[in-house]
Image (cartoon, rainbow, N blue to C red; front, top):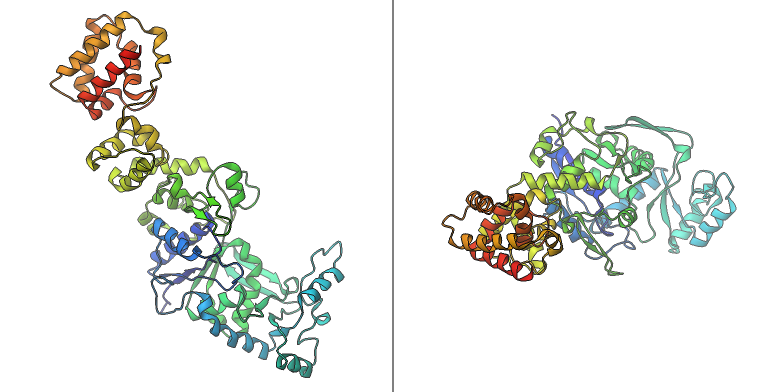
Length: 508
């Protein structure tokens, strides 16, 4: 009987959630849903020096906004908790001790200054940053270079120590990656990673293996930057006797800078003017605010859709996918090996398409909040829905609804009359005075009827409709933009339309 699929996203609560992290969540989520499995959120907070208050809640809120909520996690519980590594601290020591006992790990008593001396001593032009590995192991103060008695004395005296894995000298570690196929490493090129720190907390290397084992994780998806650590983890599964339980690995391609030159970072977003975090993040230490996709005006459907396509496709030209469609079509064999360039213009295209695709009721609360933040009194929902329906095709971001619709809520404060004055004359003034009177008497207030009577009046006055349509637009909107001018008139109503025409006539 096949094991139930169990996947996990295991972020460190150290700051904003990068879009690469959200994509990892998405691929985990889709794989779990496609295979009837469980998606687990585990908070990897073993490095207390990097812990940032509020970061865990932020991560949970990001996943909620994206619609990628886990089945198990610190906020929902589950059968394999606790789901914060800091609350699992007592679990790790026994496994580190087991590795020491079997000779696969050792105590290292080196002080920081001794490590610094080692780096200077073994530094060469070919090896500018020496690592703690098989070449220096016996030169350092650890249970490999010390006698058993010396080691026991140091332990009894309470001398601080870490536990390091003892990497074998010249073995080949091979595993099958779901994306990359067979991957091999020579252990002689990998340093003796710390497994347990002096404060008793595990490092990522030990914790990820122990937790994946105890939580029965069947598939482990993570960014390709973790590929160099894979041989350490594979050996730990082997040394702890759990090799048959090891999850299938998949190292996801990087999300690259727009020019394709290296991994996309927050700095790149700052430099090029686009977000890289899912939602706004305020650094509690510096109070610096980093804008997120949500606050910039992205729909979660568009954000998830664009992330899915950064490194995956279903083999067809289709680009717009609902989360349900992604779940039905997602498979790891369609994930690319190479990195995917992030294109912000393409990201905005996705958002524009989703704004057009979704019913306005779906994102009404978000648009309403953006408008009210700008001081617009939105009024009743029915009117707002009509406004949004009229202008949605012109909006790339939800924040665009303000510029594209503010004139539908309030009389424009300024009119671009410089665009009208060069061709303004007495005949046009006479036309608009007559138009205002005719509009006042109109019995039908439908755009198509307004347009018919407006053009009939122009013909009666021997004026080409095109010569008076732009002035009408500027009278109603304030500038040379917006949807159909008669649609605007229909929405703002008869009294407001007449008021705006008369207001403009007084200024011309």
